Image (cartoon, rainbow, N blue to C red):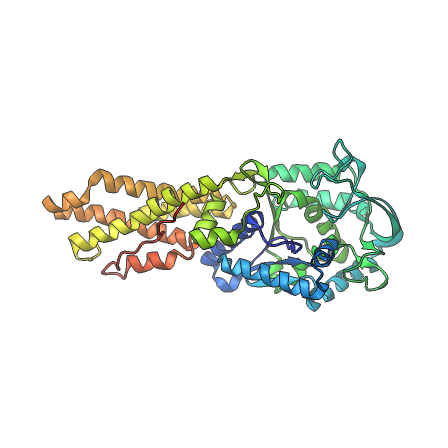
Amino acid sequence: MKKFFTTPIFYINDVPHIGHAYCTLAADTIARFWRKKLGRENVFFLTGVDENSQKTVDAAEKLGEPIEKYLQKMATIWRETWEKCGIDFDDFIRTTEPRHVRTVHEILQKIYDAGDIFPGEYSGLYCTGCESFLKKSDLDEHGNCPAHKVPPQKIQEKNYFFRLSKFQKPLLELFEKNPKLLEPEKRRNEILSFIRGGLDDISISRENAEFGIPLPWDESHKIYVWFDALINYRSGCPSEDFWKNSCHFLGKDITRFHCVIWPAMLISAGISTPAEEFAHGFFTVDGEKMSKSLDNVISPLELSQKFGNDALRLGLLSAFEFGNDGDFSFAQFENFYRTKLAGGVGNLFNRVIVLIHKFLAGKKPENLNAENDEIFKNFEKLLETKKIRSAIEIFFETVDGANELLNSTEPWKLAKVDLPAAEKVFAKLLQKLEILASMAEVLLPETFPKMQKMLGDEKKVGAPEILFPPVEK
Protein backbone atom coordinates (compact mmCIF):
# COMPACT_ATOMS: atom_id res chain seq x y z
CA MET A 1 0.00 0.00 0.00
CA LYS A 2 1.08 3.57 -0.73
CA LYS A 3 -0.06 6.73 1.11
CA PHE A 4 -0.19 10.34 -0.13
CA PHE A 5 -0.62 13.18 2.38
CA THR A 6 -1.08 16.87 1.62
CA THR A 7 -1.51 20.14 3.47
CA PRO A 8 -3.36 23.12 2.01
CA ILE A 9 -1.05 25.37 0.04
CA PHE A 10 -0.77 28.63 1.93
CA TYR A 11 -0.97 32.20 0.64
CA ILE A 12 2.45 33.87 0.75
CA ASN A 13 1.34 37.44 1.42
CA ASP A 14 2.99 37.01 4.84
CA VAL A 15 5.33 34.68 6.75
CA PRO A 16 4.15 31.45 8.44
CA HIS A 17 2.57 31.57 11.90
CA ILE A 18 1.73 28.76 14.34
CA GLY A 19 -1.72 28.24 12.78
CA HIS A 20 0.00 27.22 9.53
CA ALA A 21 2.53 25.18 11.50
CA TYR A 22 -0.23 23.35 13.40
CA CYS A 23 -1.75 21.80 10.26
CA THR A 24 1.64 21.12 8.68
CA LEU A 25 3.07 19.47 11.81
CA ALA A 26 -0.07 17.33 12.16
CA ALA A 27 0.24 16.12 8.56
CA ASP A 28 3.97 15.53 9.06
CA THR A 29 3.32 13.48 12.21
CA ILE A 30 0.74 11.29 10.44
CA ALA A 31 3.13 10.86 7.49
CA ARG A 32 5.94 9.82 9.88
CA PHE A 33 3.63 7.28 11.51
CA TRP A 34 2.81 5.66 8.18
CA ARG A 35 6.45 5.71 7.08
CA LYS A 36 7.23 3.72 10.24
CA LYS A 37 4.54 1.18 9.26
CA LEU A 38 4.95 1.02 5.47
CA GLY A 39 8.50 2.24 4.75
CA ARG A 40 9.67 5.62 3.46
CA GLU A 41 9.26 4.68 -0.20
CA ASN A 42 5.52 4.03 0.27
CA VAL A 43 4.58 7.39 1.82
CA PHE A 44 4.66 10.76 0.06
CA PHE A 45 4.06 14.06 1.86
CA LEU A 46 3.35 17.23 -0.16
CA THR A 47 3.13 20.83 1.01
CA GLY A 48 3.65 24.15 -0.71
CA VAL A 49 2.48 27.69 -1.39
CA ASP A 50 -0.32 29.38 -3.35
CA GLU A 51 1.10 32.23 -5.41
CA ASN A 52 -1.57 33.11 -7.98
CA SER A 53 -3.64 35.46 -5.85
CA GLN A 54 -4.46 39.13 -5.64
CA LYS A 55 -3.14 39.03 -2.07
CA THR A 56 0.29 38.26 -3.49
CA VAL A 57 0.11 41.15 -5.94
CA ASP A 58 -0.97 43.56 -3.18
CA ALA A 59 1.81 42.39 -0.84
CA ALA A 60 4.49 42.80 -3.53
CA GLU A 61 3.21 46.28 -4.44
CA LYS A 62 3.20 47.31 -0.77
CA LEU A 63 6.92 46.44 -0.58
CA GLY A 64 7.65 47.97 -3.98
CA GLU A 65 9.09 44.69 -5.26
CA PRO A 66 8.65 43.05 -8.68
CA ILE A 67 6.18 40.18 -8.35
CA GLU A 68 8.68 37.50 -9.46
CA LYS A 69 11.29 38.65 -6.92
CA TYR A 70 8.67 38.74 -4.16
CA LEU A 71 7.40 35.24 -5.02
CA GLN A 72 10.88 33.72 -4.98
CA LYS A 73 11.74 35.38 -1.67
CA MET A 74 8.53 34.34 0.08
CA ALA A 75 8.49 30.78 -1.29
CA THR A 76 12.04 30.38 0.03
CA ILE A 77 11.00 31.71 3.46
CA TRP A 78 8.10 29.25 3.67
CA ARG A 79 10.14 26.27 2.53
CA GLU A 80 13.05 27.05 4.85
CA THR A 81 10.70 27.67 7.79
CA TRP A 82 9.24 24.17 7.46
CA GLU A 83 12.72 22.67 7.07
CA LYS A 84 14.01 24.52 10.15
CA CYS A 85 10.95 23.37 12.11
CA GLY A 86 11.79 19.73 11.37
CA ILE A 87 9.01 19.08 8.86
CA ASP A 88 10.05 16.22 6.59
CA PHE A 89 8.10 16.83 3.36
CA ASP A 90 8.86 14.93 0.16
CA ASP A 91 7.94 17.76 -2.19
CA PHE A 92 7.18 21.48 -2.03
CA ILE A 93 4.84 22.72 -4.75
CA ARG A 94 4.62 26.30 -6.04
CA THR A 95 1.65 27.24 -8.21
CA THR A 96 3.85 29.27 -10.59
CA GLU A 97 5.90 26.19 -11.51
CA PRO A 98 5.61 24.91 -15.11
CA ARG A 99 4.56 21.43 -13.89
CA HIS A 100 1.58 22.97 -12.08
CA VAL A 101 0.59 25.20 -14.99
CA ARG A 102 0.67 22.15 -17.33
CA THR A 103 -1.52 20.12 -14.97
CA VAL A 104 -3.97 23.00 -14.53
CA HIS A 105 -4.31 23.37 -18.31
CA GLU A 106 -4.76 19.63 -18.80
CA ILE A 107 -7.53 19.34 -16.17
CA LEU A 108 -9.30 22.57 -17.17
CA GLN A 109 -9.30 21.47 -20.80
CA LYS A 110 -10.87 18.13 -19.85
CA ILE A 111 -13.61 19.90 -17.87
CA TYR A 112 -14.18 22.34 -20.76
CA ASP A 113 -14.33 19.51 -23.31
CA ALA A 114 -16.88 17.72 -21.08
CA GLY A 115 -19.16 20.76 -21.49
CA ASP A 116 -18.95 21.74 -17.84
CA ILE A 117 -17.41 25.19 -18.39
CA PHE A 118 -19.35 27.96 -20.17
CA PRO A 119 -19.03 31.75 -20.67
CA GLY A 120 -21.28 34.16 -18.76
CA GLU A 121 -21.31 37.33 -16.72
CA TYR A 122 -20.74 37.57 -12.99
CA SER A 123 -22.41 40.26 -10.96
CA GLY A 124 -22.02 40.03 -7.23
CA LEU A 125 -19.73 40.19 -4.22
CA TYR A 126 -16.07 39.25 -3.95
CA CYS A 127 -13.81 39.22 -0.87
CA THR A 128 -10.15 39.70 -1.75
CA GLY A 129 -9.11 38.52 1.72
CA CYS A 130 -10.83 35.16 1.19
CA GLU A 131 -10.19 35.19 -2.56
CA SER A 132 -13.80 34.05 -2.67
CA PHE A 133 -17.17 34.95 -4.18
CA LEU A 134 -19.79 35.55 -1.48
CA LYS A 135 -23.57 35.59 -1.24
CA LYS A 136 -25.48 38.11 0.88
CA SER A 137 -26.35 35.21 3.18
CA ASP A 138 -22.61 34.69 3.82
CA LEU A 139 -22.18 38.22 5.27
CA ASP A 140 -22.50 39.25 8.92
CA GLU A 141 -25.15 41.62 10.26
CA HIS A 142 -23.06 44.61 9.16
CA GLY A 143 -22.75 43.41 5.58
CA ASN A 144 -19.10 42.45 6.08
CA CYS A 145 -17.18 39.31 5.27
CA PRO A 146 -17.33 37.45 8.63
CA ALA A 147 -13.69 36.39 8.37
CA HIS A 148 -12.15 39.76 7.47
CA LYS A 149 -14.71 42.23 8.92
CA VAL A 150 -14.75 44.39 5.77
CA PRO A 151 -17.43 44.75 3.09
CA PRO A 152 -16.78 42.67 -0.05
CA GLN A 153 -16.28 44.34 -3.43
CA LYS A 154 -19.18 44.57 -5.84
CA ILE A 155 -17.95 43.37 -9.20
CA GLN A 156 -19.47 42.83 -12.61
CA GLU A 157 -17.43 41.20 -15.34
CA LYS A 158 -17.43 38.55 -18.06
CA ASN A 159 -16.31 35.23 -16.62
CA TYR A 160 -16.28 31.55 -17.39
CA PHE A 161 -18.41 29.39 -15.12
CA PHE A 162 -18.16 25.81 -13.87
CA ARG A 163 -21.43 23.88 -14.01
CA LEU A 164 -21.31 22.91 -10.31
CA SER A 165 -25.12 22.60 -10.13
CA LYS A 166 -24.86 19.49 -12.30
CA PHE A 167 -22.93 17.63 -9.61
CA GLN A 168 -25.32 17.71 -6.65
CA LYS A 169 -26.48 14.11 -7.10
CA PRO A 170 -23.00 12.68 -7.97
CA LEU A 171 -21.52 14.38 -4.90
CA LEU A 172 -24.21 13.01 -2.57
CA GLU A 173 -23.64 9.53 -4.01
CA LEU A 174 -19.88 9.96 -3.55
CA PHE A 175 -20.29 10.87 0.12
CA GLU A 176 -22.63 7.93 0.65
CA LYS A 177 -20.09 5.48 -0.82
CA ASN A 178 -17.08 6.96 0.97
CA PRO A 179 -17.57 7.69 4.70
CA LYS A 180 -13.98 8.96 4.95
CA LEU A 181 -14.37 11.55 2.21
CA LEU A 182 -14.58 14.16 4.96
CA GLU A 183 -13.82 13.78 8.66
CA PRO A 184 -14.59 14.57 11.46
CA GLU A 185 -18.27 13.67 11.17
CA LYS A 186 -19.51 17.15 12.14
CA ARG A 187 -17.69 18.65 9.14
CA ARG A 188 -19.09 15.94 6.89
CA ASN A 189 -22.62 16.73 8.09
CA GLU A 190 -22.08 20.45 7.40
CA ILE A 191 -21.00 19.77 3.83
CA LEU A 192 -23.81 17.28 3.19
CA SER A 193 -26.31 19.90 4.39
CA PHE A 194 -24.73 22.46 2.07
CA ILE A 195 -24.91 20.13 -0.94
CA ARG A 196 -28.51 19.12 -0.20
CA GLY A 197 -29.44 22.82 -0.11
CA GLY A 198 -28.64 23.07 -3.81
CA LEU A 199 -25.49 24.08 -5.71
CA ASP A 200 -25.00 27.13 -7.92
CA ASP A 201 -22.72 27.34 -10.92
CA ILE A 202 -19.54 29.19 -9.96
CA SER A 203 -17.24 31.65 -11.68
CA ILE A 204 -13.82 30.17 -12.42
CA SER A 205 -12.04 33.04 -14.17
CA ARG A 206 -11.29 36.72 -13.73
CA GLU A 207 -11.16 38.95 -16.78
CA ASN A 208 -9.38 41.77 -14.96
CA ALA A 209 -7.01 39.79 -12.72
CA GLU A 210 -3.44 41.12 -12.66
CA PHE A 211 -1.76 37.81 -12.01
CA GLY A 212 -2.49 34.13 -12.47
CA ILE A 213 -2.63 31.25 -14.94
CA PRO A 214 -4.46 32.07 -18.21
CA LEU A 215 -7.24 29.80 -19.44
CA PRO A 216 -5.90 27.42 -22.11
CA TRP A 217 -8.66 28.38 -24.61
CA ASP A 218 -8.95 32.11 -23.73
CA GLU A 219 -5.77 33.80 -22.53
CA SER A 220 -7.60 37.07 -21.82
CA HIS A 221 -8.95 35.37 -18.67
CA LYS A 222 -6.95 34.29 -15.62
CA ILE A 223 -8.10 31.18 -13.75
CA TYR A 224 -9.77 31.90 -10.41
CA VAL A 225 -7.21 31.27 -7.69
CA TRP A 226 -9.13 28.50 -5.90
CA PHE A 227 -9.84 26.58 -9.08
CA ASP A 228 -6.14 26.63 -9.89
CA ALA A 229 -4.90 26.03 -6.31
CA LEU A 230 -6.86 22.81 -5.74
CA ILE A 231 -5.13 21.21 -8.70
CA ASN A 232 -1.77 21.39 -6.88
CA TYR A 233 -2.55 18.02 -5.30
CA ARG A 234 -2.46 16.41 -8.75
CA SER A 235 0.54 18.49 -9.87
CA GLY A 236 2.58 17.21 -6.92
CA CYS A 237 1.32 13.62 -6.74
CA PRO A 238 4.08 11.21 -7.83
CA SER A 239 1.82 8.49 -9.32
CA GLU A 240 -1.68 7.04 -9.49
CA ASP A 241 -0.67 4.40 -6.93
CA PHE A 242 -0.24 7.20 -4.39
CA TRP A 243 -3.37 9.06 -5.54
CA LYS A 244 -5.57 6.03 -4.78
CA ASN A 245 -4.78 6.53 -1.09
CA SER A 246 -4.58 10.32 -0.94
CA CYS A 247 -5.50 12.26 2.20
CA HIS A 248 -5.89 16.05 2.22
CA PHE A 249 -5.47 17.89 5.54
CA LEU A 250 -7.20 21.28 5.63
CA GLY A 251 -8.84 23.89 7.83
CA LYS A 252 -12.60 23.76 8.42
CA ASP A 253 -13.04 27.15 6.72
CA ILE A 254 -12.06 25.73 3.31
CA THR A 255 -14.12 22.53 3.28
CA ARG A 256 -16.54 23.82 0.61
CA PHE A 257 -13.66 24.30 -1.82
CA HIS A 258 -12.07 20.94 -1.03
CA CYS A 259 -15.15 18.78 -0.51
CA VAL A 260 -17.64 20.25 -2.98
CA ILE A 261 -15.82 22.07 -5.80
CA TRP A 262 -12.71 19.85 -5.92
CA PRO A 263 -14.45 16.45 -6.18
CA ALA A 264 -16.89 17.91 -8.72
CA MET A 265 -13.94 19.11 -10.82
CA LEU A 266 -12.34 15.68 -10.65
CA ILE A 267 -15.56 13.85 -11.55
CA SER A 268 -15.98 16.15 -14.57
CA ALA A 269 -12.37 15.55 -15.66
CA GLY A 270 -12.71 11.77 -15.26
CA ILE A 271 -10.22 11.59 -12.37
CA SER A 272 -10.80 9.63 -9.17
CA THR A 273 -11.54 11.68 -6.07
CA PRO A 274 -9.34 11.73 -2.92
CA ALA A 275 -9.74 8.79 -0.55
CA GLU A 276 -9.84 11.02 2.54
CA GLU A 277 -10.10 14.66 3.58
CA PHE A 278 -9.66 15.73 7.19
CA ALA A 279 -10.59 19.20 8.47
CA HIS A 280 -9.09 20.63 11.64
CA GLY A 281 -10.69 23.43 13.65
CA PHE A 282 -9.85 27.08 14.24
CA PHE A 283 -6.74 28.03 16.17
CA THR A 284 -6.83 30.91 18.66
CA VAL A 285 -4.20 32.40 20.99
CA ASP A 286 -5.37 33.10 24.55
CA GLY A 287 -8.97 33.01 23.29
CA GLU A 288 -8.38 35.52 20.47
CA LYS A 289 -8.03 35.04 16.75
CA MET A 290 -4.45 35.73 15.68
CA SER A 291 -4.12 39.30 14.48
CA LYS A 292 -1.30 41.78 13.96
CA SER A 293 -3.44 44.46 15.57
CA LEU A 294 -3.65 42.35 18.74
CA ASP A 295 0.08 41.57 18.52
CA ASN A 296 -0.59 37.87 19.15
CA VAL A 297 0.77 36.34 15.92
CA ILE A 298 3.36 33.77 17.00
CA SER A 299 6.16 32.56 14.73
CA PRO A 300 6.84 28.81 14.83
CA LEU A 301 10.52 29.58 14.26
CA GLU A 302 10.71 31.62 17.46
CA LEU A 303 9.30 28.70 19.46
CA SER A 304 11.53 26.12 17.76
CA GLN A 305 14.67 28.20 18.25
CA LYS A 306 13.99 28.64 21.98
CA PHE A 307 12.46 25.26 22.89
CA GLY A 308 13.41 22.94 20.00
CA ASN A 309 11.41 21.42 17.16
CA ASP A 310 10.05 18.50 19.17
CA ALA A 311 8.69 20.86 21.82
CA LEU A 312 7.07 22.95 19.08
CA ARG A 313 5.46 19.83 17.59
CA LEU A 314 4.08 18.34 20.81
CA GLY A 315 3.31 21.69 22.40
CA LEU A 316 0.99 22.56 19.51
CA LEU A 317 -0.47 19.12 18.80
CA SER A 318 -1.23 18.35 22.45
CA ALA A 319 -3.08 21.65 23.01
CA PHE A 320 -6.36 20.17 21.71
CA GLU A 321 -7.56 17.18 19.69
CA PHE A 322 -6.91 17.36 15.96
CA GLY A 323 -10.23 18.11 14.26
CA ASN A 324 -11.59 20.34 17.04
CA ASP A 325 -11.36 24.07 17.64
CA GLY A 326 -8.75 24.91 20.25
CA ASP A 327 -6.67 27.52 21.97
CA PHE A 328 -2.94 28.06 22.41
CA SER A 329 -1.43 29.73 25.46
CA PHE A 330 2.24 30.60 25.62
CA ALA A 331 2.18 30.19 29.41
CA GLN A 332 0.74 26.68 29.02
CA PHE A 333 3.34 25.92 26.34
CA GLU A 334 6.19 26.90 28.68
CA ASN A 335 4.64 24.83 31.47
CA PHE A 336 4.25 21.86 29.09
CA TYR A 337 7.94 22.06 28.21
CA ARG A 338 9.08 22.21 31.85
CA THR A 339 6.73 19.61 33.33
CA LYS A 340 5.96 17.17 30.53
CA LEU A 341 9.12 17.23 28.43
CA ALA A 342 12.05 18.33 30.63
CA GLY A 343 10.63 17.25 33.99
CA GLY A 344 8.73 14.24 32.64
CA VAL A 345 10.25 12.28 29.79
CA GLY A 346 13.71 13.90 29.91
CA ASN A 347 14.14 13.42 33.64
CA LEU A 348 12.85 9.83 33.43
CA PHE A 349 15.36 8.75 30.77
CA ASN A 350 18.25 10.43 32.56
CA ARG A 351 17.45 8.96 36.00
CA VAL A 352 16.95 5.38 34.77
CA ILE A 353 20.13 5.33 32.67
CA VAL A 354 22.18 6.88 35.49
CA LEU A 355 20.85 4.28 37.97
CA ILE A 356 21.59 1.33 35.65
CA HIS A 357 25.15 2.58 35.25
CA LYS A 358 25.53 3.01 39.01
CA PHE A 359 24.11 -0.32 40.19
CA LEU A 360 24.47 -2.64 37.17
CA ALA A 361 27.61 -1.13 35.62
CA GLY A 362 25.49 -0.21 32.59
CA LYS A 363 24.53 -3.85 31.89
CA LYS A 364 20.99 -4.31 30.57
CA PRO A 365 18.73 -6.52 32.68
CA GLU A 366 16.50 -9.13 31.04
CA ASN A 367 13.64 -7.34 29.32
CA LEU A 368 10.22 -8.75 28.36
CA ASN A 369 8.14 -6.87 25.77
CA ALA A 370 4.58 -8.15 26.23
CA GLU A 371 3.36 -4.90 27.80
CA ASN A 372 5.03 -2.85 25.08
CA ASP A 373 2.99 -4.58 22.38
CA GLU A 374 -0.36 -3.59 23.90
CA ILE A 375 0.65 0.04 24.51
CA PHE A 376 1.91 0.44 20.95
CA LYS A 377 -1.20 -1.19 19.47
CA ASN A 378 -3.35 1.41 21.23
CA PHE A 379 -0.99 4.16 20.06
CA GLU A 380 -1.26 2.92 16.47
CA LYS A 381 -5.06 2.72 16.53
CA LEU A 382 -5.29 6.35 17.58
CA LEU A 383 -2.92 7.62 14.89
CA GLU A 384 -4.67 5.51 12.24
CA THR A 385 -7.84 7.48 13.09
CA LYS A 386 -5.84 10.77 13.30
CA LYS A 387 -6.48 11.25 17.03
CA ILE A 388 -3.10 12.86 17.51
CA ARG A 389 -3.65 14.39 20.93
CA SER A 390 -4.96 11.09 22.29
CA ALA A 391 -1.84 9.32 20.97
CA ILE A 392 0.31 11.94 22.72
CA GLU A 393 -1.64 11.28 25.93
CA ILE A 394 -0.74 7.56 25.72
CA PHE A 395 2.91 8.61 25.42
CA PHE A 396 2.76 10.76 28.54
CA GLU A 397 0.66 8.23 30.47
CA THR A 398 3.53 5.80 29.86
CA VAL A 399 6.00 8.43 31.10
CA ASP A 400 3.90 9.02 34.22
CA GLY A 401 3.55 5.28 34.84
CA ALA A 402 7.31 4.80 34.64
CA ASN A 403 7.96 7.73 36.98
CA GLU A 404 5.42 6.33 39.46
CA LEU A 405 7.15 2.93 39.33
CA LEU A 406 10.52 4.58 39.87
CA ASN A 407 9.36 6.65 42.83
CA SER A 408 7.30 3.92 44.50
CA THR A 409 9.96 1.18 44.31
CA GLU A 410 13.00 3.43 44.96
CA PRO A 411 15.41 1.02 43.20
CA TRP A 412 18.39 3.13 44.31
CA LYS A 413 17.59 2.03 47.89
CA LEU A 414 16.45 -1.48 46.96
CA ALA A 415 19.71 -2.19 45.10
CA LYS A 416 21.70 -1.77 48.32
CA VAL A 417 19.79 -4.55 50.09
CA ASP A 418 18.42 -6.76 47.30
CA LEU A 419 20.14 -6.26 43.94
CA PRO A 420 18.21 -9.04 42.06
CA ALA A 421 14.90 -7.39 43.08
CA ALA A 422 16.21 -3.98 41.95
CA GLU A 423 17.30 -5.54 38.66
CA LYS A 424 13.70 -6.63 37.99
CA VAL A 425 12.54 -3.06 38.57
CA PHE A 426 15.22 -1.74 36.21
CA ALA A 427 14.03 -4.29 33.59
CA LYS A 428 10.48 -2.93 33.80
CA LEU A 429 11.72 0.65 33.63
CA LEU A 430 13.90 -0.11 30.63
CA GLN A 431 10.90 -1.70 28.98
CA LYS A 432 9.01 1.57 29.46
CA LEU A 433 11.88 3.57 27.94
CA GLU A 434 11.96 1.30 24.89
CA ILE A 435 8.26 1.74 24.14
CA LEU A 436 8.59 5.49 24.70
CA ALA A 437 11.44 5.61 22.20
CA SER A 438 9.33 3.67 19.69
CA MET A 439 6.52 6.23 20.03
CA ALA A 440 9.04 9.09 19.97
CA GLU A 441 10.14 8.05 16.47
CA VAL A 442 6.78 9.54 15.38
CA LEU A 443 6.13 12.18 18.06
CA LEU A 444 9.64 13.42 18.93
CA PRO A 445 11.71 12.67 15.82
CA GLU A 446 14.71 14.82 16.79
CA THR A 447 14.82 13.43 20.35
CA PHE A 448 14.40 9.82 19.16
CA PRO A 449 18.08 9.30 18.08
CA LYS A 450 19.24 10.63 21.48
CA MET A 451 16.93 8.15 23.20
CA GLN A 452 18.33 5.34 21.06
CA LYS A 453 21.88 6.27 22.05
CA MET A 454 20.91 6.26 25.73
CA LEU A 455 19.27 2.84 25.35
CA GLY A 456 22.51 1.51 23.87
CA ASP A 457 22.88 -1.95 22.35
CA GLU A 458 21.62 -5.41 23.34
CA LYS A 459 24.00 -5.68 26.28
CA LYS A 460 24.63 -2.20 27.71
CA VAL A 461 22.88 1.13 27.97
CA GLY A 462 24.55 4.25 26.60
CA ALA A 463 25.65 7.41 28.36
CA PRO A 464 23.02 9.58 30.07
CA GLU A 465 22.08 12.79 28.29
CA ILE A 466 19.88 15.84 28.93
CA LEU A 467 17.08 15.47 26.38
CA PHE A 468 15.33 18.78 27.10
CA PRO A 469 17.66 21.40 28.58
CA PRO A 470 16.33 24.14 30.89
CA VAL A 471 14.93 27.22 29.14
CA GLU A 472 14.83 30.66 30.72
CA LYS A 473 11.38 32.19 31.21
